[in-house]
Amino acid sequence: MNAGKFKHLLKLYKNGLSTPGEKADLESWLDSVSESGEWDWTQDEKRLSNQRLKEKIDDEIQRREAGNNSRWWFSVAASLFLFISIGLLFRNLKSMQNIIHSAKYTEVSAAPGEVKKIYLGDGSVVYLNGGSRVKYPEKFNHQKREFFLQTGEAYFDIAHKENEPFIVYAGKSRTQVLGTAFNVRFYNFLEDIKITVARGKVAVSERHKSRSSKPVFLNPNEQVVLDKKTGKLLQTQVNYKDVTGWLEGKIQLNNETLKNAAGMIEVIYNVKIRFLDEHIKAIRLTGIFDRTDDLKEILFAICKANKLNYVFKNGDILINRRQ
Image (tube, rainbow, N blue to C red; front, side, top):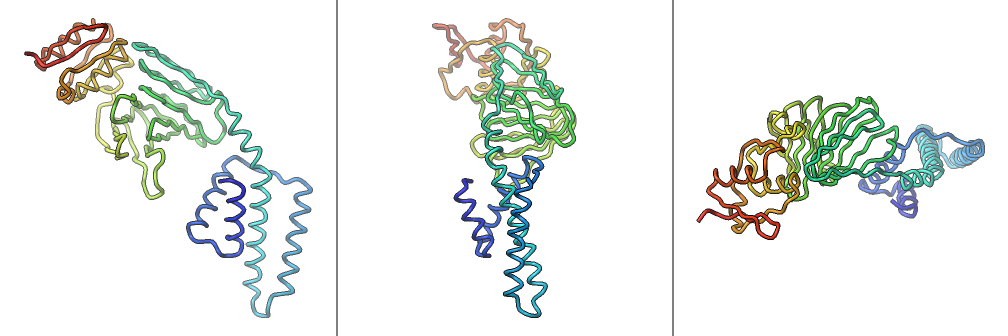
């Protein structure tokens, strides 16, 4: 919200002309601004506030009517609240903007087939699966710790901090915790985002959710699947070890489509897979392989079980139905 719009909404609020929506917008923005921390008044501001308050009280004394004392005191209290809000807000707005825009971020990527370990300054540890890319502040502030999974898969083991929630953003998903361990899978080629809890508890919601929507709370061995297109959240029971096998060098396919399986193979082996028949992308697969397995052995096993063939051509892998 810019300063012009804020002044306009504040004037309406002060004169009792705000609609419910305008009032809610103003109060919501004031709440978000106040999260930056405690504010101290300067001596000049204290003198100015006392002067302004005295003027308002004197004006009310001259205009009030007998028998309306309670109404007068309410007006004085409201004027004081509004004036303090204005003073605190505009005094700190510029410094807050400077803090926001001056934040420096670290970006880390994991190469295809690599599992990378990241140690964060708060004591948390993050593991990145191959083909993943993340971004996070060089230093977390004292209100919240934010982490951005831009693509890929990551396992988070978060250090507990009572008043500093750890928030992971991955596409349309927002996962918030205080201290726990969980897995987030968000590859760009996949149609959904999966968040799975290994320890503790997390709250998952749409990143740009409406006020009426509620987060989904997950306990250990629970997973939520967020559809990228619809934003719909589906909660299920799983064994988290079936999801985090990649930490031990496993390639686990749990009722995955052949399209998704091909995408995982691409980021692990740094190859390109193409389908000569689009319909076979929907074939479902379940199985487990080692990252050390030869790529040809994995392709042979998948194709043998589903009556498919594969060939290498011009550096790509072509998969088609068996003739």
